[in-house]
Amino acid sequence: QLVESGGGSVQSGGSLRLSCTASGDSFKSYSMAWFRSAPGKERERVACITSSGSTYYDDPVKGRFTISRDSAKNTVYLQMSSLKPEDTGLYTCARELHCSRLASTYDRWGQGTQVTVSS
Image (cartoon, rainbow, N blue to C red):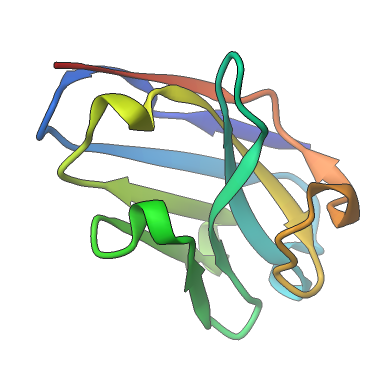
């Protein structure tokens, strides 16, 4: 099970930190990613971190978002800074082995946490 928290409403230029906590003992073996979805847009991956700590960011968030993980807490974080209205969406964490960009390869998803950025 994956449970997200930390979403909310913020003004443009603000920051938020999202958390995703996993239950079970397999967290360390998996890559963990954050996806976001918004009405009228396809769900897109924004960041991913492998089991060894390598990180990947998709172009819209490079330089603004930072993904990290704490294996002792079974938790992955997404620090979001310099937020823009176009960052608004439902942010969901998911697990997979290889940090694929394809949502179809992820086998476990959380329920998501809403982020709203106003101008």
